[in-house]
Image (cartoon, rainbow, N blue to C red; front, side, top):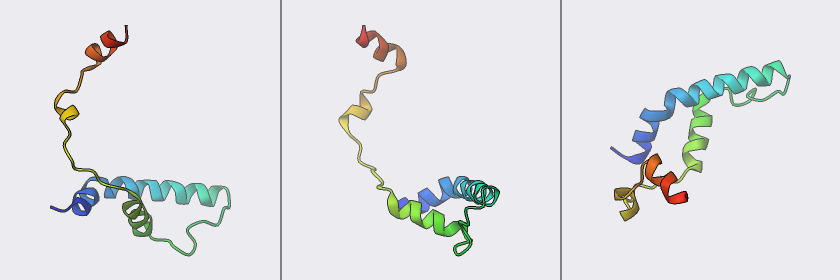
Length: 75
């Protein structure tokens, strides 16, 4: 599965909900947004094009601290 397919499966519904919320607020405040591009896939494509996916595993990920260990180091 490619990164973009994983992103789509994971976030498609949330981006659709975001689009509907933004569209509703735009109409409420008479902003005139989303009149030309009234398709949530435009927002999805914009977000997908704007992110950088990082799948590299670093050594630090194997040695992560839990909250208790982290806060004890701060003392």
